[in-house]
Length: 340
Image (cartoon, rainbow, N blue to C red; front, side, top):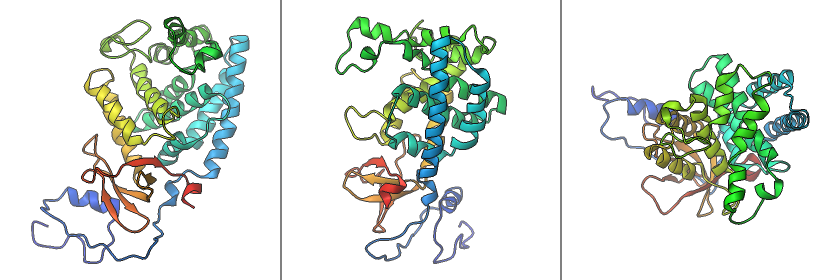
């Protein structure tokens, strides 16, 4: 340190918290000795990986959400007691583990309804976001409800339009663009009629701060703050799980696209930057597959920079700083089963 005293003794194994601590001190440079390792190392931290128990809980909640949505479409009545039970006793209580939630979103197979999976993913991200923004329990609950129901109106769009391969006609795209109004119409007269943040969060989640969105081309000062948040989460999940051009998307590729939209004034900086930073933090310790075929664990991300890439330690003990070594990229997050 500045006083000439050692901050950490020789031989200390550096953990993420220690690296963060060093960054806060007036240190010009640090010498780190890499311990020689065998051909394969067992890096601790599997608690960050998606596990079968998480998937099992998710699948049971999926079935309850499916039943809730089917009943809403058939009767146009929302079962508010079941909605609250799903949100509070299931999603908020069992699925809001940051690293596992992100791994789930990037890796799961979407058997069944893509729309229901997407709504459930956005609800999970909304729960995480409510925690990160330090909302009280009531506001966290409402944000999760808005996320869970934001795209329910898509179930009223003809299936052949939603699942069409190739370019949509103007008429077909117009049909899809009506889904926020369908969602709002299904909910505005039911038990959520007095929940304005939820209703307008759903109706306006495709509005953009620069006025380029729909259905009403509203600008930032007229868009409900729940809608500003859900817009970010909606885009993140859509990109994270897009299978049309690649097996999976790296979260860091999605971060780059979201940050571009923040800089262009489409997405709200107040919510977009904290979302990216906190999501980055949740990825520390996650296992990844690199595009050179190697597997490794994220050991450090500079959270002071929104677009920072991580430092990865491979299973052979090599450290790769992806900020400087641009010849290698993260291809995907790994599940526990894949790592085995």
